[in-house]
Image 1 (cartoon, helix red, strand yellow):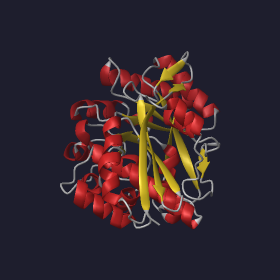
Image 2 (cartoon, rainbow, N blue to C red; image 1 turned 90 degrees about the vertical axis):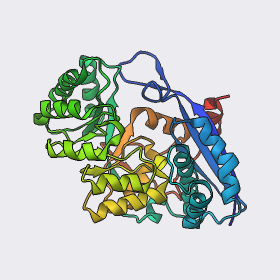
Image 3 (tube, rainbow, N blue to C red; image 1 turned 45 degrees about the vertical axis):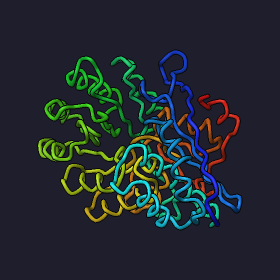
Image 4 (tube, rainbow, N blue to C red; image 1 turned 30 degrees about the vertical axis):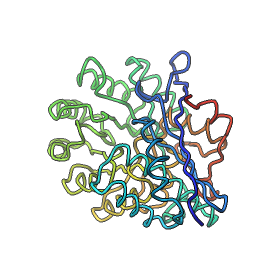
Length: 369
């Protein structure tokens, strides 16, 4: 079997957010308007699919079509290490991230999809088959909510069966003090038996992150995600020494060496390799094995749950999956009948590969022309 074509395109959509009137453009924060869809085709007619996020979307498409395809043309899609070796040698000998990591993620995920279809097994099974069901947390706490709406939105998600919730911090004009008030409002709304995570998306200084952590220590947070600018491993290790709140990071890192830095610096309690950004399942698996050596769990952040669920289900230290309201809706639009959470859990379908059937009409309707 040989790789014969790579097709990629930029798409956009809109989503429904509870308690907000009308549909919201994009699938999350203001900058999350576009995503990249990719298909890899073989000479035997098998195709694999993948998605990555909004970062320099058009450049990712150009990289795949003009650089990646010539580099991997006619390689066997099942020879994953050979494909990665070719990409590193020809396209990325200096270990850059950004566009090249996103493009590699798309290629790799699609190749695992092909391998699973060829073998008649889910990708999670090929990765190790550690489990077939995962706990799920919902990313519900959009910055558009005022404090009262935020609390009500949290109650709605608990009523829908979720027992773990994540909210955004570090974007309110009131700074860390307003974040503390919003966190307390959610904790009071849902009670003490619900897991609550916060995500700063790299936006705090070390000082403000310490202030917030100190202010909400008694809220018993499950983790504080990506608290600091640049995922500064040195500063995160220092923050970790000053708070009892577990730290999580890694979802936007572009390869295993950046993820290794977080682990070896003792900067995180939970590692978050996301195959849609780090170089695909192949690179995420290497990061997960690294985390195993240090007795760390891997959890999901960064969205695109229909792909990341295979990493967490396949590997023994996989833990909890993020069901991001926006990216979850995108998945349901493009892949009707795909897995969805029920009572705070999600199951691998058992279908070959990723188990996703593409709605060509939805793909056409979301295409950016």
